[in-house]
Amino acid sequence: MIRHFIDLWDITPEEGWKLVLDAEAIKLSKDKEKHLLGKKVGLFFTKPSTRTRVSFEVAIVELGGHSVYLSEQSLQISRGEDIKDTARTLSRYLDCVVIRTDSHKKLEEYAKHSSVPVINALTDMSHPCQVLSDVFTLYETFKEDIKRIKIAYVGDGNNVCNTWLVAAGLFGLNLFVATPAGYEPSSYYYQAGEDLCKITGGSIYLTTNPVEAVKDAHVVYTDVWVSMNQERTEEKIQALMPYQVNEKLLSYARSDVKVMHCLPAKKGEEITEEVFERFADFIFTQAENRLHTQKALLKFLL
Image (cartoon, rainbow, N blue to C red; front, side):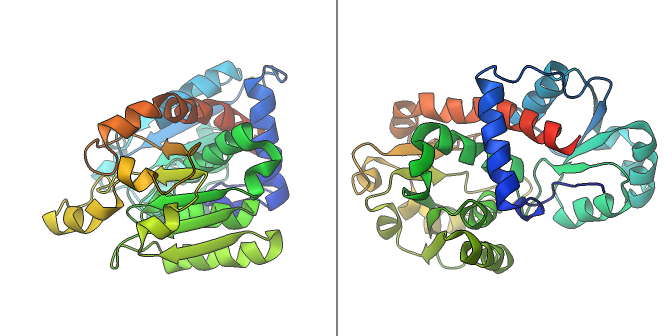
């Protein structure tokens, strides 16, 4: 059976933890196998990318495979070819397709017609590769205590926030989410996270109060307020300013708090330059771990 990785709920809690432990083994050079020897992986991107593209390309090469970068603008789909025809064509050439696009529905349509695994490398609704890697980063830091720490997400209820809701459920984590009224995460992803929490013992708490979310938190996570292809409005920026990760907000967290950002950062908006630089080493370790986790994911699917 073909396994796709469109959302985090495409894997079981047991598989999620196996991926985290595999990522750790790969990072520590305990697993040096060329798991993708002879495999060809397409990177089908609509949107610009730094970490996602480079980490996947390097992961594929280091696992012994070959990557083919496919900009949507260079394919016939940009001239109106049906997405299902593109999917059926690329399935004949490639062993897996990694897709980064603006539309989650478009990704789901592609996967429906693909006869090889499809990986979601970001859509407007979900970013499972990012958050799977973030969970690995927290496991690397807190080990078995990861289920006892308080994780606070503050800012816009975007695709990363949606995925964190599912991650809390899948991995049994304790997540507080603070967003302004009108900028909440998807109720669909919230319900998926809640359903999984009933199985794993995780917990999700939503609030409009950033101080409540951050109070005594071990981890504070943020992301850009205006994602790619979103309209930037002064109204949204003003609504989100109380959610900026700055020294004042962090004063409510634990003294040994860790700050995470999935990058790129718009310093002066969701996070101050001062806070970003104070936690830069941890943030760039978070970025590095995309490489190791995606190796584990490719090994798992292929």
